[in-house]
Length: 510
Image (cartoon, rainbow, N blue to C red; front, side):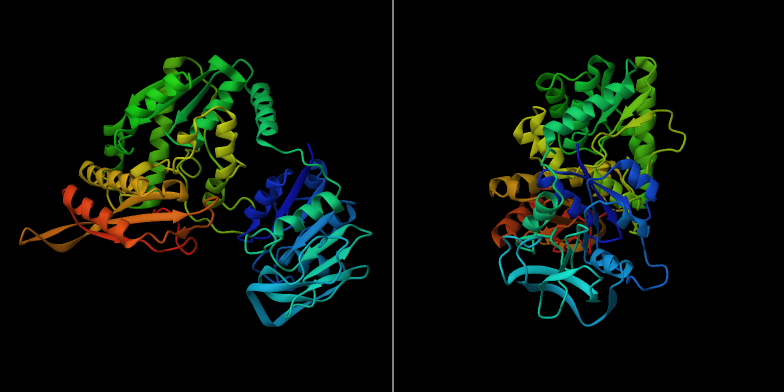
């Protein structure tokens, strides 16, 4: 299978580049900008993409790749910073722009036979840059421009080097996917051979070869990610997989019972149920830091899996539903980007972990995981459920996690989901949930003063969880949710609506 390597120079859109390439049927992986030339050669990429980034190529300590990547004979596409980088390293001139360009622009197509074949003239593109390529390197021709950018697209067909100053990977660039497809298929000569079916086949073979006749334990959280992990591993090793579903006391209303029945009866998985709600509450007592919550929850999960494994016999492998956004937000391993938050199954794992990890979804985005779930036979209703964090309601109960706070949040959250479904917008949303704040406010109920807690309602839309917009819910829906929560949930006298996008906020509050 052919592979495209995306070298990450710190752009917030790097993950979108990889996703868009996969969407058109080509497998792609992200690597740090400073990946060694030997490593790149060993991976035998069919093409390379240089991502955008926040820095200037002429700055001290600017992220630069090995210049020898341009001697590999591999087609290369530079995007934004990647275009400037290509120009800078190959003899062009990059300068600060007098007019920084952020947002929409119209692309004038100067040459239609290459990268911009079939692209509408004066079509909308998305710019985000403060520098510009003032002079293209020898052998390059300018094939597109905007009113503020002379070199919006450039090509060296002889060496198969191409660059665009705008971002074809974002939805704001109307023909962006077409431009990427032109590079991959018309110019680089790749074939569309990446699909969920091919992924399942490759991962199954890899897991089977790695595990052999040894045993695997898999923790089910109740979400799609861990279920898909279990289904792939089960396909690979069959009866040598034991799933453990832990009731950590942090699940939604009546979720443990409902999901145990689904796992056993509908999906025929070998599942062991463990009631550990008291254990998790003891461990979280007095803890208010979200990072500590996640690490404690991760540690407790591992302890339970370890105990379950000893009962099963010797277990060598632990399968986890880690997906790509978890990795990006927990640890800047792909490029010069910041840690946002530790995920309990990434940053929360103990250093002395005795299991070898199996993480078949580690390089997949959420939308890909959902497609994969359908391929593996999971029912559509379950697959399209909203993401639920591994640490559960612990990261939606701000401050200390107690049985009382969990009960309040559980009831309020259930009302949010009920009303969202009644309004017919559940499938339009990425997530809908409640958050319990560690503050109290004055209210009036039955002519008496109250001093009770606050529930935040959070409704967001997204495609991959990396960015998100708050949903413009109708006043009628918000009024219904608020009225029901205040009337039906003891201990709450105020409901507020979160209208923060991601970025600058995250979808979850912790």
